[in-house]
Length: 365
Image (cartoon, rainbow, N blue to C red):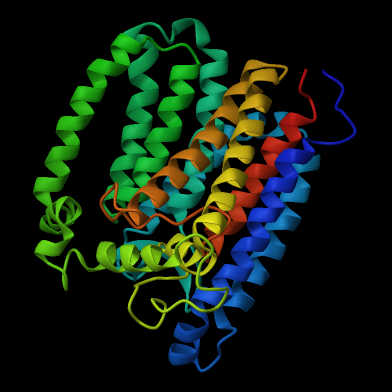
């Protein structure tokens, strides 16, 4: 067993904590008006964010100091539990509908999203599986199809909620692990064409997804309907200019921009802190991802390398989709910005995952 270093990657830890602090400040700034109108307490979302941030940091400290090999031991059990939770959330009376998707388990304002657990559960299991079966991954039927079938099953259950954004993150992170494990690019390209056809089928099967695509191409065709969110997001970013309107001075948070504290919090950052503030946040994410990939490259074993790759891939895909939606490059998908957006289980699990990444960095060569 490789001896651990005394400290984890401090640049990785520092960028994570800075993003978390920025997130807490911006959640309050973006949500104060909405929280006062809905709950009579302008600090409602701030208190929730602070609570889950504390829980997440405690979980991160635990996983940062727990040898990452332990997750390999419980990978099968963790994935099985995740599948059970994903199935349970689809049962009427057990799963809770929020935002048009049956994706929650819980009571009242507090709950968990099984799909969030599935992302990390799948990353751990795929890392274990492919680190042990690395010699067969170049074979199409025996090596590549079984892990892809497992990912497809999880994606299908998530789509029954439906939650395309979380499903896309799960698939993106899993494919990155599979490619890193040695899968042939030719095989993945063929399957990519099949996946593209399936994606088109999903869009055609649900009219609201087709509306999102058409709104993405030209949001001003339906400015008060399908294109509303995209337009209001651009209305927030544009006036921000170089230095922004000032912290707390957003205009779009006054019931113009939907979900300003979650999906579109980067719009508020750009409006209040301007190009400089938005760029600073992107630099912090770039630093986090760079140090994460360095950890994956220098990990002492294949399992650690694939596990770090999956965690970095999960964060990267989520950041790319969220920022892409906010600036109008992608259709609206309902993906939050990691460490920044208001969240409960999603924030706690993200910090827990980064704790695993930090532990791997302690063993880097």
